Structures are given as structure tokens and as C-alpha cells.
Image (cartoon, rainbow over all chains, first blue to last red; front, side):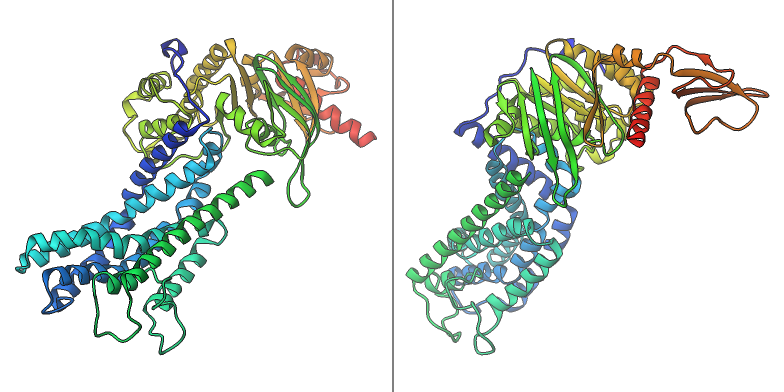
Length: 273
Length: 292
């Protein structure tokens, strides 16, 4: 260790107000992204699942005989069948990890507002966990183009399809997976989440009551059917573009509500001291 | 930064009284905090760092009232904190971790320069790109010290800062603390009495949530005069009314440095050090409690 004479002038510090809060959101998001993106298990689990999804695509051509746009939208929806399960499971340890590593005590002494760190953690870790999904998505699109589909139609459909079918559900799952383990043990949450996913998204309503055909299903049924006209022959209630818009809005509202609830839990814990 | 604590109590859920009516007044310079495990030192420091809410009493750090949420939030802008159990993200490099903490502490302009300067100060510039999981205990401690200094804090709270440092690093760290104390308030909690002896003119001793002593180090040492002895024995170690501070094995005899109310047979009066004084304080306190 050397003398503090080496230190230059004291740095300028800004705490309180909107700009410092945004800086800490950005910092938390950037470093949570880095840490999650460096997880080997993320790439291993998502890689295996992604390989399986691409295999399914290559074997079945999700919507044989459909247009390039239809095939692209089908592929986008197919991703949403299983990959959000791994997405949710892999996000569930983000808060408990801070406690386990005992970093939370140090973070608590920083003047950055708690809500900024919460939002940054959510955005950064969700974005990183989405990377392998996006990579799988890209591989599938490349496969469709390599199979002779029109590249312009594929790419032109891919972006809105991902934003409307996959992203709202992922943000919904991400919010609950980051926040719920504040009050539920990680393993219990993961078990319940996987059960919920199969029951609430994949279970046919004929077998038992389910959320599958409702606005609350994050699997993207409403957007897929209402906007991209997917699965016209599949039994179940038809969905319109309005249904899709309502479903997306509800999913995003629920995600925001989960974040607000987590903020209240953290505030309560801090106040209880 | 002036710290005033009056009648401070902290009771955890389950009814554990970590602090019970603590009164302290701390001004600039290094203030040593001594006490056995479970004395309440870490709880006191966590309250002063704005992490914990006191159960009752008052705690004022500079202009910040730590019994209020806004006071606890406000003090963090002036605080450098090194916890006893330092948590780090293993997958970040030393440089990344400091940069992250700097951003959370509100450093904007001059942030990168500050990080590099502190890496130099703690001697980790050449290892700055290595992941923290590869750092030794001493290197992690040095990163902890660097993060505590990022915001040029007016109040520096360090809990067992020299654990894991080798003797040379410990000495260098003590020198660094002394330099920092020039225009800051530093609260140094440690089990290593030597660290306090070398750095602090004012100390507090906590025991079972109470302040057993507060004042100048020399006063505590003076109170132990006449209670520290050297004694050579051929037989078993002296016990009962004496506490052995150290022992040296000679060829035929054993030389003990002991603390007690009265000199043992053949005991030679010694000039006490801070360690002797601390042992005497704790022993006399236990004896007084037993007598009561």
C-alpha cells in the first residue's frame, strides 16, 4: 500500500436527484448484465435448449407451406414455448446471490437509491439472459433464409414478432423471477414457476382450467393469433389485435407491479433494520 | 465529522440486545473500538453507516440524524465503509468492481482516474484485470479498502480491516489510516489491539452492548498500572486470580506476563501496554459483575 499523497483531487460526487439515480440504474444494469452474461450455466442450459429448438425447427418447419412471414412468426412463437422456463429459472438467484455473497451490505452503504439498483438489476440481468435466446432466434432465422425463404420478409417480420410475441412475456417472467425470491426461497420459486408455466401456458383448457387462452398468458398466444394470424386451425377462442394489445399491456403492467412490490419489500426490510 | 450517540439501543428480532444504552462522542482522528466477540461493535458500526435502524436513543453523524430514514440515506454520501465480512462479486475484476462501486457512490467526472489512483495506493494495479475470485484474502481486503476511499469520505468506518493482511501490509495500512485521519473521522474496530495502540489516541471498549470504557488510550493504560506483572515459575501456569497475557518458555522455567488485582509471589511490576490494559479492564469488569 502506498501513501494517499498519490491520490489526486477529490472526485466530484453527485447524489440525490434524477441524474444520479439514472447513473446508478445504468451502472447496475451494465454490471448485472456483465455478471449474468459471464455465467457458464446460462450458456450451457440455454445452449442445449436452443439447439433443441433449432432441431425442432429444422425437422418440422414450424408452419409448413406458410409464407416466409408466417414461418418467421411461428418460429418466434416456438421459442417462447420452452425458453422462458430456463429464462425464469436462471434469473431467480439474482437477489439471493447478493445476500449469499454478502455484497448487499456494501451496496447498502452506497448512496445510490435502492429503487435504481432494483431497476438496474432487473434490466441488466434480463438483457443478459435474453442473449442466448436472441442467438437461438438468429440461428433459426438464418436457417429459414438458408432454406430459401425471402430474407427481407424473414427479417422484416422477425423484429416486430419478437417485440410483440416474445418480449412482453420475457419481461413479465423476468420481473417475477427477479423479485419473488426476495420473499420465497429460490428453489421453491423455481419449482413453482416451472409448474406455473406448464399449467398456465401449455395445459389445454379441456383438461383443466388454465390461463392459456387468456390475456394473462405470457407465452404469446394472443399476440401470435391476434397480430400474426398464427395457428388458425388450432382449437380455442380466436384473438384479435385488440386482444393482443390488451394482453401485452397487462403483462407489462404485471411486470411493473412485481417491481413495485419488490421495492416495497426492500423498503420494509430497510425500515425494519 | 462529529459523532454523538446517546442512550443508543439495538434489539434484534428474537429479543437479542446488541446495544444497550450506548453513549459515545467521537470527533476527528482515529477512534479505536475494542471489545470481545458479540460486544456490539459491528452493530454500532452498521448503525453509524446508516445500514441499521437504532431501536431507541439518538445517533447524530455530522448533520445527519440516523434515527430518520433521510438521515441514514444522507450519511452514505459522506461515508466509506469496510465491513468485517467483505462481500465481492467473484466474476468481476478488481477494476470493474471499483468502477461499479464508484458509479453507485455517485462519482462521475474523474471516476476512472480515481479508480486507477486507488489501485495504485492499495498496490493492485497489476492485478486489476484479474477476476476477484482469484484474489487472495489480503488482496480482497485491499480492494475493500480501495472501495471505501472512492468517494473521499469524511467518515471512514473500518471493521477488522487488517484481517488477512501480512505484517508488512498491516503496518502500511496503519500508516495509510493515520494519513487519512488528518481531516477525517475514522472508526477502527478490531480484535488486534496492536492496531489500535499504533493508531488511536481515543478508544471505546464495548462489552455485552455496553460501553465499558471511553477516553484516551493513555488513560486506559494508566488504569492498568500496578496490575501487570512478570512472574517466573517452575510449576503450572498461574490461574484463578490472574490472567495470563503471554508466556515465554525458558530452559527450566516459564516466564508469564500476567494481569491481576494483586501481584503474585515473586511477581515483578511491569509497565502496561494497551493489550494489558484491555485485559485488565475486561477482567476487573467481570470481577465487579460477579461481586455484584
